[in-house]
Image (cartoon, rainbow, N blue to C red):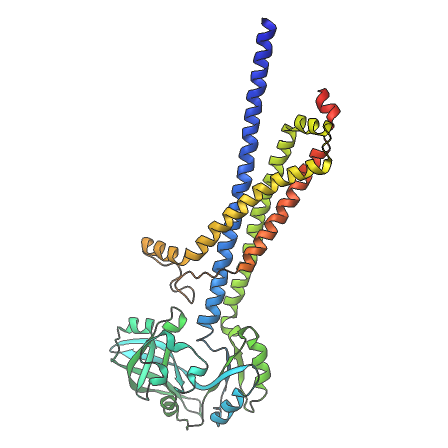
Length: 414
C-alpha cells in the first residue's frame, strides 16, 4: 500500500510538471507567432505610409514646385519666347514656361506679410505646374493684369476675402548705383486662393507676367527665369544640366533636389530604418521559434526515440519539426498580412478621426501635406512574406536537427 501510494504520488507530480512545462512551451510558441504577426503588420503599414508620402511628393508637391529652373542672376533673359520653344523640343522635357520672381510684401489695411511675387504666363504655366487643382476661385490661366492669387495662409493672416483689393510692395534697386529705392506699390484684386497644405500657402503670390514686367521695367520678351517640367522627376538634375547647355544666357541651374531634396532623402532614410528595425523584430520573434522547438524536442525525446525504434527516418523527424515551426510562422504571417493590409487601407481615415478626437493635427505646418497618405505596394508585401519565411526556416533547422540526434537507447534506457 505504501509503495502504491508513493508511485501514485510520483506519477501525479511528474504529470503536473509535464503539464506546466507543456503550458510554458505553448506560451513561447504563441509569443513567437504574435511577434511575427506584429512585425509583419507594422512593416506593411509603415512601408505603405512611406510609399504614400513618396507618391504625394511626386504627384502633389513636385507637380507644383519647380522641377527645373534657369534663373538669371543679374541681367534678365532676352527673347524668352524663342527659348521656351527651343526648350520644349528637348528630350525628356514635357513643358516649359517663363516667369518673373521677386520678393515683396502683401499689404491689407495695416497688416503686412512677406510673399514671393511670381509673374507667370497664363497660357504656358499650365504646361509646367498643376497649381490650378489647388486653387479656390479663379485659376491662373484665367487671371488678367489687375488680379492676384495668394496662398491660403497669407489670406488668413491678412484677413482677406476673394474680391478684396490687396497692395503688393515690390522693392526697387537703381541698376547703376545699386541703391535701394522706395518700393513700388500696386493694388490688385484677390481672385483666387491656393490651398495646398504646404509652404506654398504661406508665401505664394501669383500675378500676370505682363504685370510683373511692367513693375520691374522689363519689355515683353524679358523675364528673370525659365521653368521646365520633365518626364522623370528623379532624373531632373541630370536633365537640367544637359538641357541647360542649350541656353545661351548666363543662368543659375536649379532643380527640386536643391529645394526639396532633403525631404526626399528623409523619406528614403526612414524607409531604410523601418526595414532594419522591423526585420529585427521579426528576427527576435523567429528566435522564439527556436526556443519553443528546443523545449519541444526535449519534452518529446521519448516519443522521438519510440518513433526511431519503429523505423522512422531522420528526414521524417526533421521535416516534422520544421513544419511545426513553419506553421507558427505561417499563422503569424497570414494574420499579420491581413491586419497590416486592413490598417494600411484605412489609416488615412483613422488618422483624421484621431486628429479630430485630439483636436490637433501633428502634420499641420510640418510637412507638405496635412493628412497621412498610404499606398499599398504588393512587392513590399511579397518581400516581407519571403523574408519572414526565410527567417522562420533558418530558425527551425537547428532544433529539428537536434531532434534527429536523439539516441533511442539512452532515452528509453533512462
